Image 1 (cartoon, rainbow, N blue to C red):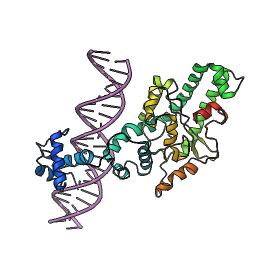
Image 2: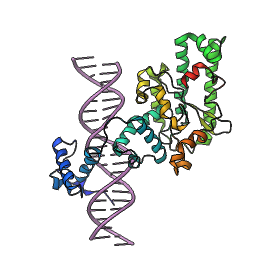
Image 3: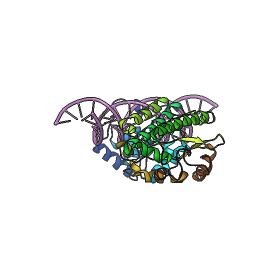
Image 4: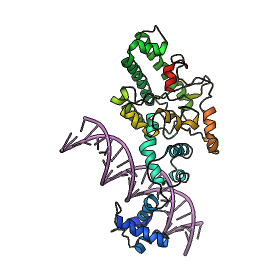
Length: 328
DNA sequence: AATGAAGGCAACCGCAGAAGG
DNA sequence: GCCTTCTGCGGTTGCCTTCAT
């Protein structure tokens, strides 16, 4: 129990390792093994604490460490394992040969976590966020999409996309407002049934950050917003829908999902979790005992069934609409 | 070209469990 | 059974690099 006293010792060097120190540590361990980390620094002629040596070895010098960017497969594995294990980085690392827990943790904190937040998911529960602040970005995204449609092809064209020939711009506004209201209603209704799931959800500060991202110039042009939504399957169960991925033309879009190589790869990324463009893995404790079954389970049941429309507002966006099918 | 902001990553800190005396 | 030491883990920090203005 208790802290290791080694770090309390004064006079020991801290901070970045020099190539000479690396060489000493490497040579010693290759020759003698690490043995006791506490005594290693003295034996190896290093003015470091054992802890620092161990960290340097496990995170950097170990010969089996894999360097470079995480592959899509590795990202999927991390997402999946994190949904099951939470922040058990060492446990996750055991499933990714050559990757250290520190590396995975950093990758999660700097990439995957942000990505989930931007997509409207709670990074801890891997579920769609249902708090009010989390809903705002989605509403703004919807409005941005409307703006983009209007700017790109004029209100009439936008209306035609949504309602077919003959619809006017006023109809579009009404439809957007109605969609917003309906969506808010869904959120409010679902909140009651999903409170437990989001009890440990990210703070509103994160939601505000996501909101900020969506309100940014990249976000407001509509192309950068990974729109996500939730709706009901009719039985009161929260039904996360698919991600209609906007055309990735902006900086934000290319950064947010760039490592997947574009929208098609986003679909691929989540392919095992319910088909094209579906959600990241859900933290379903009932499935945790059998992680191997999670993909199929979340694909067919946890999302509320595949029979219903994948769209949040089928009455506004017909499934066979070419504009929508392009997104999906 | 200069400067500030943001992102990425290596390393540190402190807690907790395991092991040994 | 208790205490001390060691090791491992997760959270956090701070520096360096890259990007945006």
